[in-house]
Image (cartoon, rainbow, N blue to C red; front, side):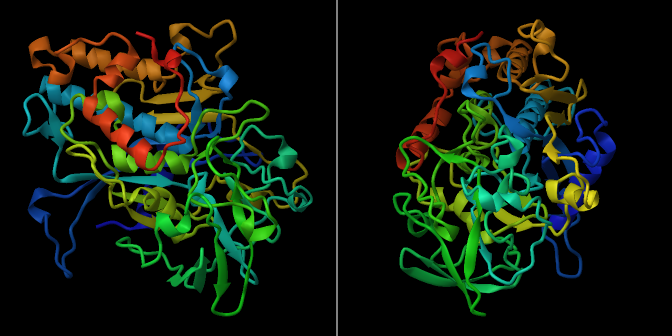
Length: 502
């Protein structure tokens, strides 16, 4: 139906052709990360393919995001008019929510074809059965998915960014997009320390995790069940697991790719030991900030949450019969490990139970492409040769949604690019994917529907604030509460004060 390279190429082409120069990295000086949501549609008459005639599908990018930064806690605003987290994955997901809101508007007003059809429950909608969504990211998500081993005597897939990281084993990686340049020592969001090496595709290895050993090939899987022994229980027992690898060739693990994301308060911290024992795996992590701690959970943690609660968020659940799940995740060419991806995105939540009707732990198909993003850190580094200039992450974030009006949104420091200090607080100083603007779009959707056709969840007691609308989505809140109680108890939640706007 589709391949990882097809998804990656589609996203790279969309970035190159459909997105303007504004917000993109300055050539040969800056780099960025890319993420997107791709809609896959199978023709109704080709529901079942055959070996000699595979199913032909239509692929379309419906949201896209770039970005590498997030703001510190002191810069957060109670009005909901700033983007707290501008990592590419988060921008792409918020852009996807904007797309979903538009599609719901089409469905409820019956003006045009929509991705939604009436559900079995009155006044609720569900995704058309011939559609599903694939999430693409040019790099592994920061946090747990980027803690992967490096074996001795293996080639590095991307050229080293610098060699002075060895003199500073603090673990501050590029996941900390706000860090000083002399602490940026990884590729894209996460960096190796000591020898810059990675696993060669097809290299069999024996993993010893808390005494439990199993063999695993690092070929790109076609998805499906993870081999025996890979689970959140043996990869992160009370957050105490580290990964030690001995290759069948006799090569040993010399280190791990490190993440700049820090363990959240309440979680067991990293050991900080030299080499592969530096990190512990399976833990919740928060994105770092330069001197100003952030409240933004790592992208690995957020994607894992979407895999249980859906990508639509609480507001849209008022109109939906079931969450909107991703069917697959595709990663571009970068340091990569299939077990780490499975552990971070699915393994930690695989035993969650007693979820409300419609919610589940989604079985993700996880693949990697061999295609490198042309404006990733390692691609730009390779072009620069021996340039004396510093290579820095692009300060802007681009949001694009498949909507008819103003699909593009370019921000810096959480506000539309070019916003001055005096301009903050004005309508034009809001990103179209900020909390308050997505809330406005939701309210606009409600206002276009007669109240007697509103979902039951909004008719009993009409909410007023953003927080009240979210809390009124009772099934979603029950699912989120269950997930926190069983797995993510240390998840950092913003104080209610930040959700009281109307």
